[in-house]
Length: 317
Image (cartoon, rainbow, N blue to C red; front, side, top):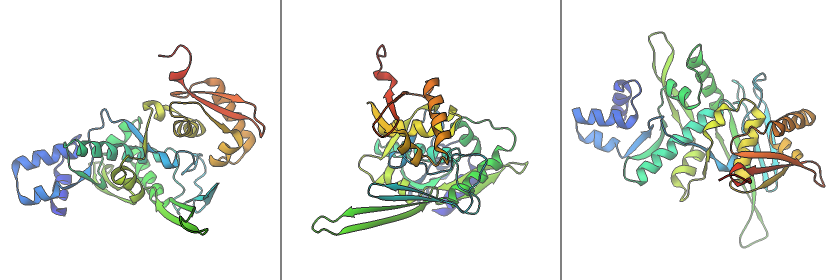
């Protein structure tokens, strides 16, 4: 099976998806090894028409740093929750940024699409390996392909591999007063390797292994624990605006939701509350967030952020 995978990776044509390359090679040499390999395929489908997906379980905390300037190598961010806590731990290459996380969104999106195709009988059960071209990553994340983008992608993969998410949840036992402590720790990606390079030495194609927590949410869940994200998400330049959009998508959905400024600040990894409030109020005034209208409301414990889907506003159809 591994030899066939290597053959497909080596002989795939530029812009060709895994399914297209597999189908083409099947036509030239149909054998038992090909049939067995199709039972559990790497996942990659055409970049066109794929909706953006995100893991709904972690859309209300920042699993990444929000700053482009500070690497935060070796640092730990802790978010205290009602039933436990989450820690984001950075490796020696630095903590993954919210912009690095775009690659994880692409991974989740393509895994979800591959699983949907499998359920409709139009593809093989996806494995955990994601094999995109760097050009496909840049296209999906709506980035230009000039300059040193290839090197930027490799550095992002290093940070994603080195950033681990540790969740500790305290769950009451069913038949006793005892509390069960559930601890899980995984990286944002399990690993990666470079499959091919261009004649100029730039990375051409990579293999990314999805962590088990993402794979299980999409493949093993009866209802995949993912939410669709606006295609305009990648056009949001501000890190806080991106975080607020993810929070609105998770908390609001198709209805009104309310979060305290202080609570959002504590979940956003931003270091200065005064600066956070200034940026958040500027975002409210601009009213430019995709899908959601934001406004401020006074609350007993401080200012509140109200998030309302634009489709529910007066005059919207």
